[in-house]
Image (cartoon, rainbow, N blue to C red; front, side, top):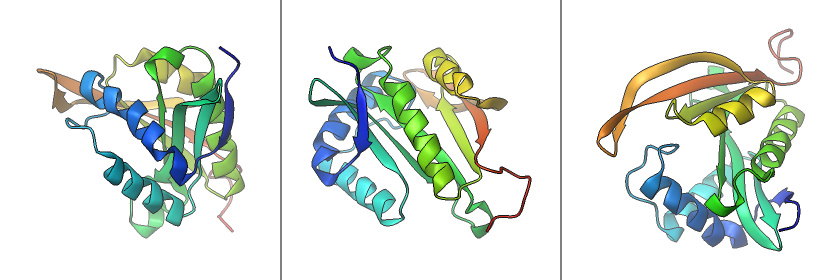
Length: 175
């Protein structure tokens, strides 16, 4: 396998994005969804994120999409408008090869360039050490754990909350 590369996602990537997300839903605990959304629903989600101008990237290896990441609204109330939440998913066969790091770095840079001041990671399952470690390695700090907030695969799951200031963070008022 070649080294991963990152580029902006397009509508043409949605089938590959859905294929990456499907096993994360069916067998993983990073997502608290129970049934994987079909391609049409993933397209609707992609278009909604793109329409709001949030950054959305894919990682490719050997000419194939192996991961994706996007930023979206942390919450919809107006006071949260300078805060984004990140989402990163990597195909099982590409995990541990650097695609997640490249995607998250691109997402951080693009979000800061767009004037966002804080990125929040809401990591599904406190046992998701790979995601926690990735976020920590890029400067995210631990905020807390919401214990037993979800129930999937016959067990209670936690959410780990981490944050990363972007740009000037909270040292000045937004422009």
